Image (cartoon, rainbow, N blue to C red; front, side):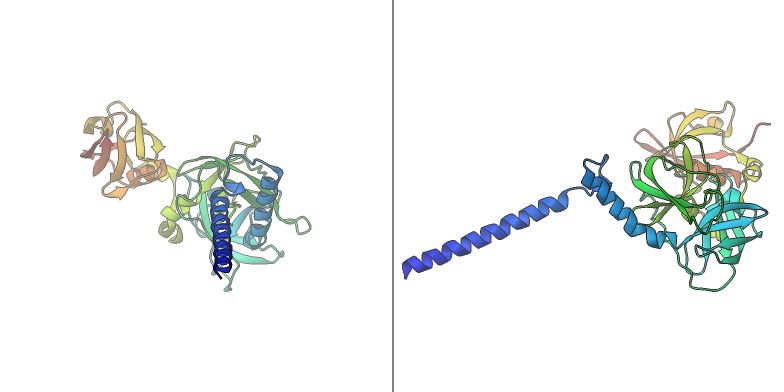
Length: 331
């Protein structure tokens, strides 16, 4: 009886040990980075995993990508809401209130009207006029895409071609600022306005400036749309020319994780007179957070020369608040 009990205890101990080891092994395996999260694919299996992830995401993503036709020209876009809101490049949509044609993946054409956008980031919007429950792609949350992430570009290079369909290119995010995002996805004429996706099928940018070099293609990041969503929906086009008529601070900046770092000051400018120093980091103006050069340009340019503003900044470890009067842009 004692021997049988001992054998039973040994069996239970062996079973528990195996379960604990399997759990440990599974946890260890789960902690391994996914192939598309590695800096560099390490094996053929990694490449096959990335391919499988892309293929699983493509079908839904393609259903939201459209061509945009206007005045004999053609570009691309992506539907991001079930009521037919389309994101595209600012140089494709142009001024607000223009009538354009949206070409759906199956070749059907529907009417759309251009909305607002920004000449600074080259972002634009259109709205499909027909009612319908349109297929759409989700937008990534602000700050989700990072340098090194895998991504893929969709678009209609050369215009919509029913037999060919849209073209897919895969690459990596090389550089990212709030007003620009750069990848090595190969783009061609006609891709402008098309979407850049992460491998979760979320829109992270819109194709903007296309270059001959593979690593010099620029996209308007999704952050530029999210930050100015209400303005764009109201039909306002942020014009560089109009903003240049407004207030002038007189700083050269660089985007950093902590805010806008002052790289240089225009001699005799409002910034210099107000006591701003090189290497100061601007964090807010009149209580509005400033985390991009685009935001700074818009906030300052939307005011008039002579307007007083309150600037929050960081100088080393100190938090400072400076009040100053905006100047006029030099001729």
